[in-house]
Length: 339
Image 1 (tube, one colour):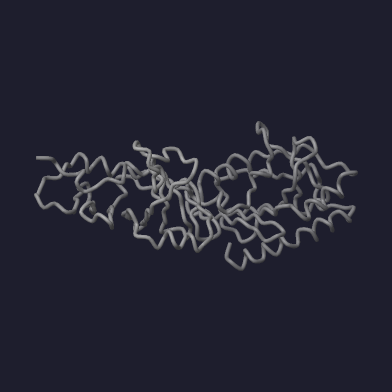
Image 2: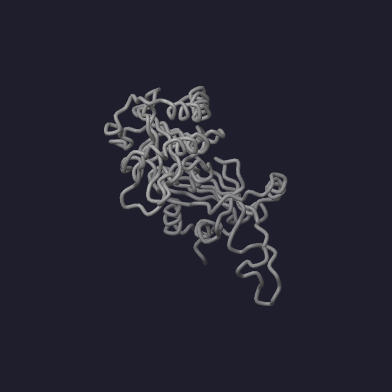
């Protein structure tokens, strides 16, 4: 779906109230309730999903490969979230019944103001194979209101086996869709790794991989030999490195953090040309933080368990855990055989 298509789809979402209110005034229908099928047949055929509300909030998911999606055209999508919607929700939603005539107008009015428009595209088609709207929950909290384009009446759907509301799966919060994975590289995919210590350059190193062989360069005044076992093991540590959360402080505060000299700069390049760089900054301590004081009773200036970070693929300030990255934040000296 190109950008002009997104604009049109957003307009359609804004006009949601018009369509639904129009439907509430019409006595006929182009669809037999028994023939309305919300569930998709084959998730593997889906190549794009567009969801938007009347306010203009939207999520646009585009398939790059079976296990790789982007959100809103440029951001890497969190595959776990994509799979929950695409494989655990859309193929399994089930119609429980049609909204009762006495409740129909009220349900439509609420969907007109709060509903989410959903378009599902298959096989890279320009037009959606399914277009429906998702509303709120039923009074008994056991169903969710849906309305299929062309149908007269909204319907009540559920997700068999799910304790909760189906509409929560159609989430328009962009942060929930952005990939938590900042570095994902298997050993045989890695072309190079660079870890720089701007404040302690003697600890910095660069690893180059050529075929099955890896070499490392760094500050080695004593010409110590390289521990090849440690080097090979290190290459296995980059399969899944995730950040913990976003930090949504005001932009001027984030800019001040990023203006500091970094603690570490980690870059991983893959043989397919893809690369990721994560820059680490100290994160200040705060009241209530576990481990706030050292053994002498002095308050710590920085959080020992977390860092701020900037990822090359995302213009946001991140929080990352030392527990996750400690294993890769080693020094050049850790690869040297001792005398």
